[in-house]
Length: 120
Image (cartoon, rainbow, N blue to C red):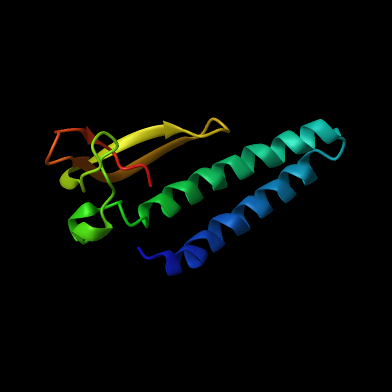
């Protein structure tokens, strides 16, 4: 996926989130401000997690196999350009408690042997 595809990819989930909140509000006409805020935050947190996964997947370092050496990140330990080692999954928890699974290159430094997921 390319970054230019993100708007198209996010349109339907965004519309769904808006529809879900509107439906929730119809079902809870006596909800307090805090309850409404919580319902909106819950639904937006799900959309946010989807957007994070997608945005990270189009990162230049998501797949180092296709990244020219001059554009590869530097090893944080010694400053040498890293190499692609393998692809792996990494699961993270967002600030709003959602689980995000990222599949990206796992890098290794050819000089010092440091291995890591590139940060971008």
